[in-house]
Structures are given as C-alpha cells and as structure tokens.
Image 1 (cartoon, one colour):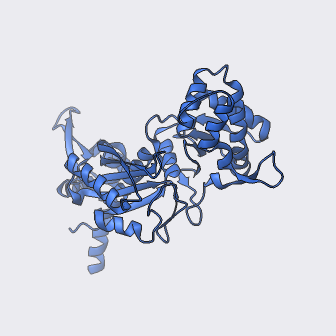
Image 2 (tube, rainbow, N blue to C red):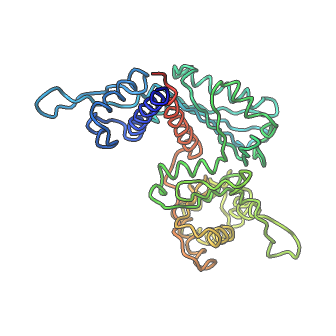
Image 3 (cartoon, one colour):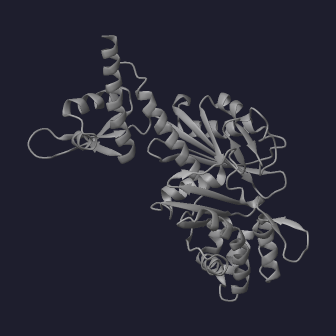
Length: 396
C-alpha cells in the first residue's frame, strides 16, 4: 500500500510538473490547451492546476468565451512566485576600477530592476560588492529574499564548477580566491551560478539574437579589452574540462616580422592592438570601439583599416572554423558592434582568402548588454528548473 501511495504522489507531481513546464514556456494557457499539450484527462489537468494555484505557482489571468457554458479560465505561471538575479563584472578601463552591473527579473523574464556601479576590488571584497548590489535591487523592486531563487554571475574568466574556482580573471581583486562562490552563496542565501561572460553572451544570442534558429554556432567576442570564444553545440555550450574552452586570446602565434618573438591572438586583435592599428591608419578614438565606429562612419576611406583588421581576425577564426566547422559564426562585443556590417563584410572576405571551409558570418543582433542579458536568461532557466523540482517535493 505504501508503494502505491508513493507511486500516486509521484504521478501527481509529474502531472503538475508537466503543466507548470508548459505554463513557463508558453505563458498563458487554458485547461483545454494543457490537455492537448500533455495528453492528460480533464480531471487530471484540473487537479494539477488546483494544486499549482494553491501552491502559488499558477494564477488565473483571464477568461475566454468559447460558446455555451461557463467561460474558460486562462492560466499563467505566477510571475511573482520566484525571481532571478544576474551580476556581470568586468574591467571598466580605468586602472584598478571594475564595473559591476546587475539586474533582477521576475518569472516571466521582465526586468524589475537594473543598476551599475564602479568598484575598486583592491579595496572592496567581491562578496560585499555582489551582496550589496543584489540587496539594493531586491529592496527597490520589493522582492522578498525568500523568492530570489538564483543569482547568476558573469565573470571575465574561466570557472571550474568542480572546484568552484575562478581562473584567468580579467579584473583586479580577490575574485580567484578559494571559497569565494560559497561565501557569496551563503551571504545571499540563494543558489549562485557562475559562467564565463562570453558564454553568457552566447546564451543571449541563442535566445534573442541571430543564432535563435542555428543548429550550432561559434561566437567570437571582440571586446574593448579582451577576446573570447563561445561554442554552442546544438544549444549546449562547450566549457571544457576546467571551464577554459574559448579562451582564444591565449592562442599562441608568432609575429610575422620576428624570428622568435612569441605572441598570442590577444596581441593581434585585443583592444590595445585594435586601437594601435586604427592609429596607424589615421583613425582616432578613446577606446577601440570608438575608433572602429569612427572608421565605420567613413567606410570607403577606411577600407584599408578594415581589411587589415579582418586579416588579423581571420587568423584566429580560421583555426576555429577548421576545427569545429560551425554553421554560423557570430561577431560580438563592443568592437564587433561598432564595426557592424562593414566589419562583417571585411571578415567574410578575409576568411575566403584564409580558409577553404565555408561558414556564415553574422554580427550580433543584440544592442543591449549581451552578457547581462545572457546571465539573466541562464538564471531564469535555473529558476524554472528549481520550481519544477520543487513540485515533486510539495506535500499532498
């Protein structure tokens, strides 16, 4: 009898989980919609919705008149049932100062609060900085601490999930100290995820950008400071054994004008190199992106600059295409956004010269902070998983 009772509980939980999954994915549905999607009977769906509404996970948002009889109730996931947070940390360009950008969204993905602060991580502990900006957004948005289910951190670094350690950090301060993520998790009192910032930009590109319908793609990040590569294999990101996949800036090269002077790809197309190349062509700018934007505004006269820059980009990109053969390459980051279609066309031409394999090259379609948006998307996906798991733990 106890086994039968346990099976009954499990079956109810599976039905509720299926109904909630469809509400999370499709927003608003009637009982009839859910019956069609799940294949469950009318009484079973009615009971699942009753339990979800009693638990505060689903609500009635309207009614639809379908003919004789009472109007059909329209259900949706309760957007205030849980929240996701995201924090992006990166070098601001000022010596010793980093930029911390954060946002909080409800269960529907609507951003309820967003903030950016400059932090000197030589003076401020990362745990304190992350906690303060999340607590600030929570208070401003009126989000109860118990409903902030997951916070996603985006770092310019490699993250080893097995040891919860951050390597190759692109910002100053104590971000690579052992135990840091556990401390943040304890202070916030919620789940905390960590990923490389370029990986999270690819998450945003997959959900919101030009890669929405791609079987897979490689995202090459051309930033004001650093380089990065994200590899999406059918919707799954390749992170490597210790989270280091995509650290393309460290790809070793040899300068063409020197016998033994070892350089890497960062020396060719990193932010400082782009700025120096622009200056050689008489193009000025305070940042690499500003210089590239100036060149793009006068594309015809700046053609030699874009050809030279594209040749450098193709050095690293040709290796990526030769190894992975992706159906799509997305150029992203501040420099890529500033160059736009002019840079895309130049890189396409350079790749034809450098690489016999064909691939489609596109510029990111995201004009907002792709890293922060990707962190929110990843955080929200984790919240959805947590809610679906919680259904199985709900007492009868």
